[in-house]
Image (cartoon, rainbow, N blue to C red; front, side, top):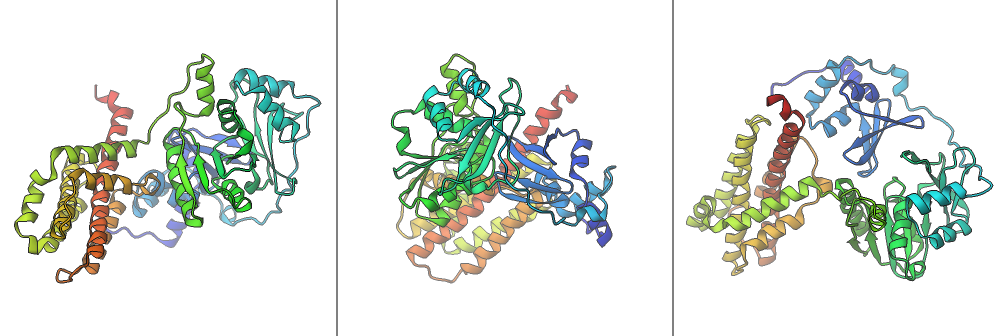
Length: 478
């Protein structure tokens, strides 16, 4: 791609673009959420405020250029061009300065004189167990507000002081929900038990639904609803309860929920020696399970498309026999030159990928398949040089286990650049004449499989993107 020069003023203009107007100009749907807008990345919530955005599941955000790069898979020049080329009006310079505003005090909505609307909603529409509703209402953690008759789910700190509240509309057909302004995200709706287990949910309704489905001795365990504020509340429960060593992630069975499970598990492993498991509902969420049990057609679960593609890809590689591939035969012929031949082959493929248009899916699929076979062939041959003989599917399974959907981001060019950097690091760390120990060889194999996995990720990226475009515009070609 030729170098494009942007003046500082042009970059600032693109960075200050009003994302609400930008998204509307592209036919995207937005929903008002207080003083902000809510946009959906699949089923994940993204908050939009003027030229700023925040992705709640990934806990990342930024300004307009980062938004276009992240969600439209564009590199910096293309993102700036897209923003400058649109017809929306940039924000005034003063709007981009972060305003210092006083933090609004946390005030609970006024409680209604009774809870008839909330009880009816939870019992008849959500099928929550009556005793469970009574438990949380009796303990001051659930009530009905006066103004809109919302269900209000309250969170208390370790001293019993009210710190958080989450509202959910009780009107049929309404999807309104949100946290009270000024609340503390560390103390969202939760129950603390005495066992070593913590169950984590996306929303209070999910938590109550799970308790209804698993009501026997439920009080002994701890439960927390994240209320769309990442994992702050789960971390706080763990900090306050050192006896908890096992975390069950019970998030939605969809792409966003699956990705969030990986992200949260990764974070929990970083902060402590926790055993983290994923417990998924059979349908989209735990309330859909209750609906199905009560004769209502539930919303189906959905898998993570990238994960499914990578899994199918790895399984197909195992089925086709790597040892029968051209790449394996070439590398096996000169085992003393394994390092040089492998890195030269991978470098050549990366060079070709740089010159292939992102729309040329077939060529990209061919090059990335070649790279993956090459990486797997290297791993198999290197192991056998050390007397380790494993089945081929061990290597494809290893590659699959290394895949983390929460790290599968970036556009076409950035993915190639990442692969090139990893290959350069590999060459620098493992010179051809370096004698490796068995443990060093194992690490080398893992690094090579990571490069192979990057090729699989790129293959999945272009293939799924083409599939999405075909589904979206295919009817035009008929």
